[in-house]
Amino acid sequence: MVAAGIFLSRIAGLVRQRVFAHYFATSDAADAFAAGFRIPNLLQNLFGEGALSASFIPVYAGARAQGKEDEADRIAGAVAGLLGLVVSVVVLAGVLAAPLLVDIIAPGFEGAKRDLTIRLVRILFPGAGLLVLSAWCLGILNSHRKFFLSYAAPIIWNAALIAALLVFGPGNTEARLAEYAAWASVAGSGLQIAVQLPAVLSVFHHLRFSLDIQSPSVRSVVRSFFPAFISRGVIQISAFVDALLASLLPTGAVAALGYAQTLYTLPVSLFGMSVSAAELPAMSSIVGDEKEVAQYLRSRLDGGLRQIAFFVVPSAMAFAALGHVIAAALFQSGRFSVEDTQWVWGILAGSAVGLLASTLGRLYASTYYALRDTGTPLRFALLRVTLTIVLGYFFAIQGPHLVGVPARWGAAGLTISAGIAGWLEFYLLRRSMNRRIGTTGIPPSLLAKLWGSAGLGAAAGWGALVLLPPRHPIMVAAVVLSVYGLVYLGSTMALKVPQAESLLKRFVR
Image (cartoon, rainbow, N blue to C red; front, side, top):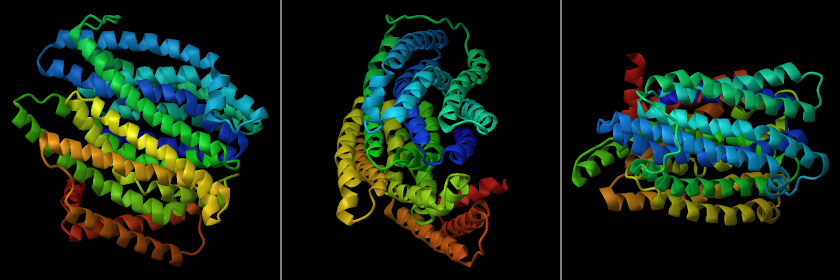
């Protein structure tokens, strides 16, 4: 259900990005919107789903598992009150400090481009605050095993932006249209909360909002929140450094990175986040002695890792081998040219380096959170971000000159550096967890089957691409990616990969 909700919301997001690309392509306004959106989005990423789920769900779900419904209601009300207060203060500070924030995140922006970015940041910040409160709704619903609504709710946010672009796109300048889109984002954020509230309120017995920090359970949430918050902050620093470095590259680099990010975060969200989100409440609810808990966690962790790998390995191969087909189908329209498509493909291919590691790492992090340990993932995140920054500067700024390619390709160096650092973090997370609960991981034989099948599918996809006569990019993608997917599925079935057999049985049923 998580995957279904994410899939629908991401499809809506891809439609939004296609409409956005049609009107903005890789223009100055596109750069301004991408950078301007990233700044208030920091608020959502820091306080929202990642940090809140890591600290709130284990405590709240644990109280419910022990039959303490009234205590669970008090925890939920206090967390909502404290979160609302803190977010309100941060939103106000963000609006006032917008010029400073833009100079930090996009030092390469000047003149009208900088001014537009500042205006967009001030419009977008309140919407980001609303999305943080939406993450509280998600935590409540997930703990009650209501997975679909919260992950499908962003559809309405995407719909608001799409409507604004279609209505105001014709006849407006790019700068003016960017402002309309920003206001639509705020409206969509409010609607995203509104569609969840009825379901959220229905699960409570006696919900009362408060600022209670005396409760031991609330204090436990707060204590766990800060390491998770810092961990998310470290990750965001990496994202900000990427945006900063991209702003120093030729015009369009920030926007191109944003288009590619929409694609390479799709499998991370669809498969990594869905499995991790579904497993966290289940892992947090286990009771028993240390040996029983370890055995249960190993079983769920290993099953989740195999499930993630089955879907993410072909995603990484598709980005590397057929990224131009995907980018053309989604974005090549209006002002978005073939050259822009090739640029996004290069960035996508770079992201394929660490796609599997970053996705598997999410599930390991969720396992730590279920054990009420938010400190260990934080330490490893610090190492990853440090390496990402160092490698990012070298690959993005110095790398193109060393290999003799145009400076714009430094954007691909950013995703490559993040991938290398992601593998280091994954290794450290797995090693530490194995010492704690016993050996976990994916058998090398299974990985060989998955990568081999994905390679065979990519070869078949390229064969179809060569044989196809010139057609619209969407038609080309439909044929090529269908061939790729069918060959991958057929190969894994022939190799008796359990996940493929399970998927086919579920589909037939």
